[in-house]
Image (cartoon, rainbow, N blue to C red):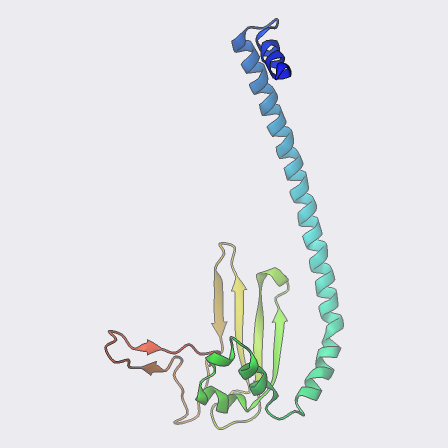
Length: 189
């Protein structure tokens, strides 16, 4: 307790008056904050450099993974309904596959995910289908681009449906007493 009282007295007793003391403290505080900001700026530069290096390593290993993914894909193609089973087994994606989607996914032979050149800016998913009774396309893509302002731009293949096979994106169901029809969420189609 005595130390605290002594410190208080020392702050009041000095060659400068009370106003000059607070100006001196404020000046020191401003200098400390400026030095802290300089160090923070330096740290941000180091973090940016580290992020660039991590990106380089990730891109290099993506290339190394490609032949492994190719071998895996060849084995997957020999397993009947692999992708349908994988999607249905997923806790979130399984609920998004309608009965019609499930019929279509029986024709899915491979799925590819390709990062944009800058991994942080987005990726493209390509679904590769065998010839099927539903649409002309053998490849359907969906590209996710992450924009600077924190939003995501999503673009995809416009499906060329075969006659009488067009499945609308979001099947509407009338609910009794509902003001608007409920639109089912769909995975890809």
